Structure formats: C-alpha cells, structure tokens
Image (cartoon, rainbow, N blue to C red; front, side, top):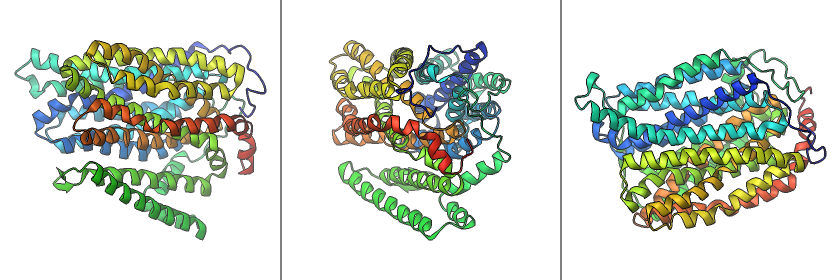
Length: 541
C-alpha cells in the first residue's frame, strides 16, 4: 500500500474468492438497506403530517437534525470499534438495532416515538459504512477495490431509489386495500414495517459471515486490540462537546492543546453566529414551534453545523493525543482534501435528490405516488449503472496511472456535472427532464468508486474505520446538513423557483475542482509516505 502504483504498475487483477463476493454482497446490502430506512421518511412525510398533526418544523427535525446529529456523533466511536473489534459481529448487531428502531416508527402516535425511532436509526447506521469499507478492503486486493466500491455505490443508489418507490407505493396500496386500518395501521406505518423486516434476516446472515484478517490482503497484519470497547468509549468521551474537556484534563493535555480547543470553539461559534445573521437576512423565516419551543430554523441549522465542527476538532485533537500514527496518516493533505471534495459533492447530491420530487410536483404536476415510482426507480437504475461503469474504469486507470488515474476520473465527472445540471433543470416538460436527468445522474455517480477506493488506500488497514467515521461526519455536515438547507433558502429567496435553486448548489464546484487539482499534484507523494508517517508516530509496521 505504501508503494505508488504510478511507480509500480499493477499486474492483472487478482482473483477474488466466492466467499469474498458473498461478503461484498452482504455489506453492500447493508449499505442499501441503511439508505432505504434512512430516506423513507421523506416520501412518507405528507401522510405522517396529516395523520399525526405535526408540522414541517418537527418533520425537519426528524429528517435532518435528529438523525444527522446522532449519526455523525456515534460514527466516531463506532468507527474506532470497527478498527478494534469483530467487524462482522458489530455490523450485524447494528443492522438488527436500526431495523428494530425503523420498525418502531410504525407504532408512533406522535412526535416523541418518531424522534426515538430516528435517533436509534441514526446511531445504528453509524457503523454501517465504516464496517463495510473495512471488510471490503480486507477482502479485495487493491486492483479490484474500484469494482468493490462500485458495488457499494450501486447499493446506495438502489436503497435511495427504493425508499421513494417502496414508501409511496406500499403506503398507497395499504390505504387503498384496507381503508378501515386493520390493527390500527395506516399506510405509512405499514411501509415502515415492510422497510424494517429485511434487516432482521440480513443481520443474521452478517453475524455468520467470516471475519477477514485485518490487513492481510495488504501484507500489513494489524495486532489484536486488547481493549476495543474501552478505546471506543474514550473516543466518544473525547469528541462529545463539554465532556471532551474532562478527557483533555485526564490526558494531561498541554496548554497549547487547551488553547487550540478553546480558540477553535470560539472561532466556530463566531462563524456560525455570522452565518446565522447572513441567512436570516438572505431568507427571513418566522420561528417554528417544535417540542414546545419556539425555534428559529436558521439558529437550529447553524447550531448543528457548529456542533459537528467542534466534534471534528475534538476528534483530531484526540487522535493526536492518543494515536499519533493515525493522526499523522489521516491528517494528510490528500486525505483531508478528498473528504472535503466528497462533502461538497454530497451537498450537491442531497440538494438535488432532496428537492427534485417537489420540483417535479410543482413544475409538471406529478403526484407524490407518480414521483415516487417514476423518479425513484429511475434514480435507482441510473445510480447502479454509473458505478458499474466507474468501478472497472477506476481499476483500469489505477493499473496504468496509480492514484492519479482515480483523481482524473473524479475531476472529469465533477468538473462537467454543473453544465448537465443547468440543462436538466431547464427542461420544458417531464419527459425532457427524465431524458436529461439520465445523463446528469450518470455523471453524478462516476465519482464515488474512484474517490472511495483512493481514500482508503491512503491509510493503514487498522485506520480505515476511524477514517470512514471522520469521512461520514464531514460529508454529513456538508451534505445532509448544508445541501438541502442551501437549496431551501435560495428557493425561498426566489419565491419558490426550485429549478434555479437546485442549479445554484453548483456554486461549490470551483472549490471541488481546486481541491482535486491539489490532490492530483500530491497524491503519489502522500501514498508513498503512508508507512513513513505512521512509523514517525510510533507505529510498529
């Protein structure tokens, strides 16, 4: 792993065993199921609102704030547990847990139980991506990892698309077939039950999956962690705002570390305070009532962003104090810039996918059921085709150009995507939109396999779980936390012009291109010095 493929061209792709493909199928299914259980709330929102008499503010808290806060926070300790414990067992337990919590929503009679359901889904799903990535990279050789990561991209697209199709169709079928609500279940409640059931079988199959040797494929076998749960708990304590100061004190942090933490917190608070004021002036909104409180939506939004930013700062400080090799490896220019690129691009993806159903309804008069079936299935199919093309293409470019090949593919995909976005959301009718969206969606999915496979090749095997967790919290903040919010306030500013609002999210593309050009310049250097930087921090490799 420490040798650049640019210096040593790869041989023919190594053969992957049947058990390896089976492991890929299971962890990809887990990834798809996590997206399905996460996103199904969006298509069921109108039914929930009407049935439980809750407002948009509460639904916004459920869809974004409650989920993203706990998902991002717990991805860090669970990512550390991925690096030290039995990954297949951890993933199985988490699948079972989030499926139970997803099904719990079917019994909700008000906001409180729905909030508990979303909280549980967020915590459970926090381990899905770190565990899946770590298992794949210890099962597939470097020459086949682009293809393996494409499978995760396919599963993600399938879960996202099916969440809309399943939620809309199942809920409508139940309400039409059983208008008297047998057992007291309405269509949206039955849809939550249907979405939760597959997870129980998948959890059992994953629990029985053989645990791969950590680092065996790369020839860097990691020693067994004697206290993985203690280390995971320490990570949670070190990153949770407020409790992190107790952690700094117990670890005898230097005055410089305290200064960095407190000045960093002050800078985050100042930035979020400024951005709250800017957002309030740009798109004024009245306070919304939620949980008995009157909350300014802009204050709520930037509180979540500030909370997440402080968690990230605490995470890097904790790594520096407790795991200097991981800090030296993860905190490299290429790794950090790739995470930023993914975060910005995820904000585009969430902004597009979060508001396109409403765009189709407003612009072309499609019903929610039509939108869920047509757009949901189209997005699922296109989301599968893109990675199918990008995965093998990424492997082919890696064999000839090393890490730079993956960067070039990502740069091409994300650099031309805004032009297709402008063309797509200027369509005069639904048919033209779907035809144009086909090309746009394929381009938007080409970046996932090359960026993911490159990112996890730039760290040691035992660091892939925590790397994935940091990746998750950055992309959650910039993606789910910023993308839909940005499109929403621009739409309000433009008096409901969702087409222009969705196009406007591409304002981040110049930053994406600049970051990728820097990665293109640095990637071979960062790739060849992974072991050197780890050893400088005390790693025995």
